[in-house]
Image (cartoon, rainbow, N blue to C red; front, side, top):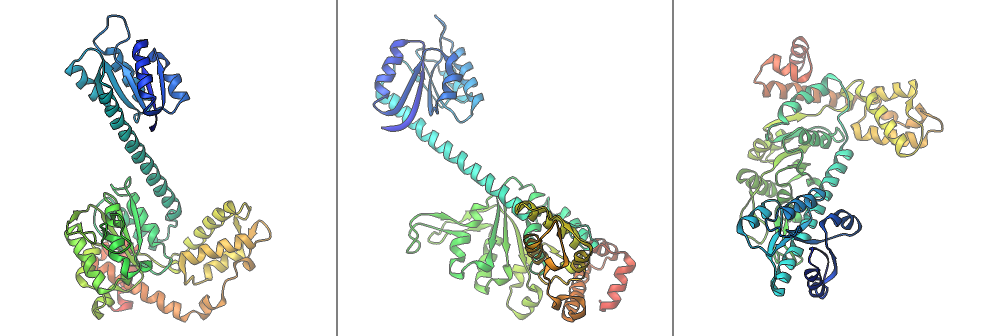
Length: 455
């Protein structure tokens, strides 16, 4: 007994009776009706899996035009309906027209019971497969939508940020590999997702892989997949993250944490554009756009021999160096206001205003944890605030990270600035105008920094 609902539509009572008597012993529910004009009511009241539809209803008709009309009507209601057409007048041309218009199959009356059952069984498997594919697509779309909401938008208009956004806008429509550099908490995942959203792959998967949290022993099985029996717990074939991201974008976060042997395996995949599952010898082609990110100094690691230079060349066709929050001027207040509004909504509080003393404190603070730290501080402040505004007391910022006691932070700021200027000059091969444009500086301001850092 197959748990499916069959709807049979025919103007011949003998046909309906024969169909009902035979099919009810094989399918959980069989519904019959004499006129296709009842289709809308029947489909609205029942979840129908397969529709067995006669092609002629007017007396003497044999051209099948009525059946084709009602076929198109049914599929206009829902393209996923499985419709099998039946007629007493065998005609190859008519059958071809029916299949082209979306019919699943075509049978002749009078039918052989075994052939009818085989046709309906095959149609039921198709129905299940179509439903599963549709459900998976809805789940994928929902997950990608949730991911987009979590990733958030790029907020701010400081010169340092605008320079990065200009580069992002140029590289996003291409398939070039992008390496995103920056301190912890600067929003590398947000920028990676923005690259995906502005690319030609925006309607495909965005696959985020945190390499820093991935056990080294699971690296190959997670990224490249495995075949059934490849190891003790491999009970089924499983595609890896690269295969799952087919046609979309794969974001390899914390790539600087990979050991040299794993770097070699990743390089092979990126060079050959193929993956081989554990336990298989077959190579599978992949079509993905690569974005990588790290907070580690990869150039220094290459010099020390802890990161492969050929892998670095492969992943950084274009580099995006994200500025720390302390270099973004008034962006910090814009971000704070954004978080205050978001957390007020989440916690059902009306605490969307930041008072002047708190705002001044936010601007003076060094934000060693960058945007992530600011987000946590504002979330806590919204929760703890006693009235409708965030006060200086609600922020609970540590005094050790204010300018008066932040010599180390100042040194870090200066080194980051030197690195940004150096990278921009190298990227544009010494072209001052292009480097200044990327950094959001005037030519004169860039010359002063070149002289300051001895570049």
